[in-house]
Image 1: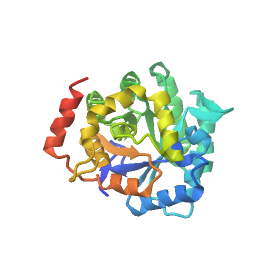
Image 2: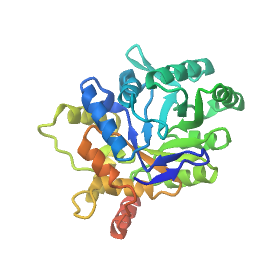
Image 3: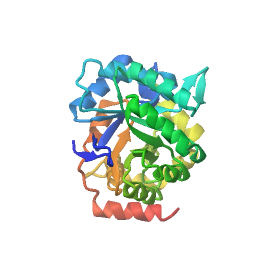
Length: 304
């Protein structure tokens, strides 16, 4: 597993990160299987693990902490979120400094850490990133609650606002073949010295042909979520079906190779509930995208 520097943080991260969220933290997915995936990720050389207090209906962060208990964590970059939490049956948003402070303290407890290596504000508004607010976060950093500060948003205006603050070290953005406009955003972030993490690098699997019959529970769960929240991406993904079915590279590896080839990207964070899928994704580290495939991707992107 290759590693890359995370902007100017001084941290290095594996090119492929593990997304501890979604169905991975769902109670229908067994604790033992979830732990097995994390342990296999560690064995494969992954050093970046991303989670959040609102993920998997509030269960993901604690599950990751239990999965990592007893494992050597000094070389790991465990990233979590602040500003959202799961409460009362829904995700609640609170970007007040007092709420963020309480969230960080809870994250430390759930993850079993003395300090959080990386914290991302989870979906702040651009106007919330004021000098006073960022200064307040710096005071929490000086308290020793976290080491590096980032912003996680799929809104380019928010990311551009974050780039203006030298105290913000990283950004996490949805970067995948369906989002070619993110290439320029990643370049601006890297030019500002920010580490860039690619969320949704597999485009939620929307480029792959779907088997609609005889779905297992986890696949039906993901399909239902896609139909509810990502119909436009499902439609756009059909143009990229050619990524799949090749003999020289799998569809997941092609998608990841494209994302990791975006200048400035430090790592691509993958969510999975299958060891075979994890291993397939890890094989994308250091993989060059075939030139003919890169040309077909560019042509499909130009149709937008």
